[in-house]
Length: 97
Figure (spheres, rainbow, N blue to C red):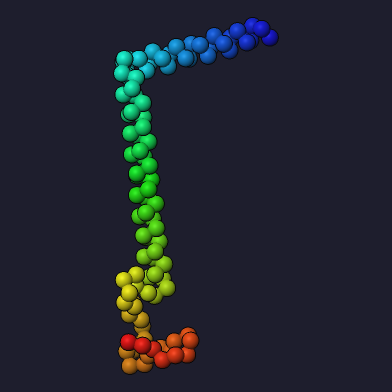
């Protein structure tokens, strides 16, 4: 089993060396820039995810109000009933204008 441990250790050290060489080739001596770029990417991804979530909430609100029959802007959506016969309110009170 000692030979297998040696093989695993050798493979891991080769992969670490390749990663370090790749990073040195891509970023050079500017290690601080690399961490700044990674942070900027994460911030940008967070902003994009937040924008998608906000757009989804606004869309859901709009669709749910349209299905219920209310406009999200305060005025009710026109119904299929004629304007001469007001619909009874669920509480039994006369409709207000």
